[in-house]
Length: 242
Image (cartoon, rainbow, N blue to C red; front, side, top):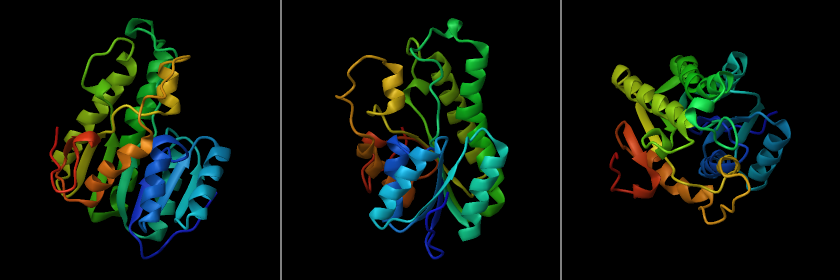
């Protein structure tokens, strides 16, 4: 499924763009003139998201599929590189695992494997596939969580995967100093995944995902060096790694 692309715009790949933070970021980038390639597992959700962006005169291309699938990742890179050099890759797609959240010793091995495949292996594989198509000053953004830095009961599987993603991103930054590798914690948000973490509970007090977008944009369009950041601490001109 495809929307429109702008050959003269900066080019981005944003995974998981049909809802939540991914959709909010795709929408913001598109409205700022970027050509964005995004995806989602559910084609109907992706179609609806692209229609909403198109109605606001944004520019986006959607490809339904799962980031854990190599052929799908290749399709994302091909669609973006057909427009031009890729300026930005945002690894946003993620999975929580089991819901409600089990203790670490109760997580089924297959569930844990799926969490790591989605949250760690797929992002690194996408970057690997995109490397030859990146602009000279490209930016990689890995969306993380405070669960990757703090020990929260029930968050062991998800948190361990985010900790692994953070470390992988830090190593990538050392091995590829020509890239900016930003690990970004957007904080608590009112999303479907967060609701899955707290089934039956009222999470309406959490901020809408769009509240994290200004901080993300300041990082993406600024010159912050590789490092870990929290969007709540980001202000234009005062960006500091956490």
